[in-house]
Image (cartoon, rainbow, N blue to C red; front, side, top):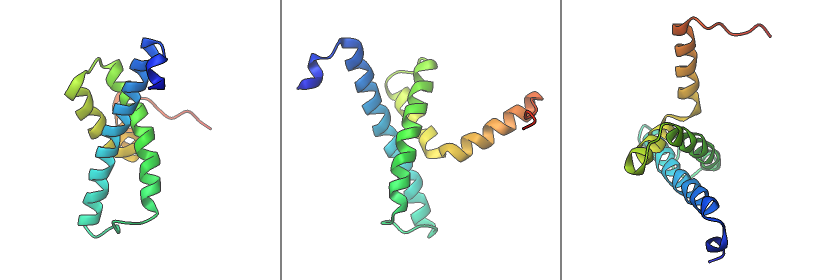
Length: 109
């Protein structure tokens, strides 16, 4: 395996990235399946390509957050899957709510 010749730190980072993407794909698949069940989306469509990109992005972000929170094992996996299921719009809405609650105003453009 070519990746075994990498330094241990790089192997650890690569393994973490792969697992984060895997659990993010699981989370986004659950979200997609829920929309299909509700009749709001067809199972096979081009939207799946967007879901793949969202899953990769959310996997990287949630994987970094899990590492920052010092989560390991299944706790990190569950965190990544849950954040990926929620997706970027839900997280943005939560951020706006938290900023309002803390009294932080948007800067003027």
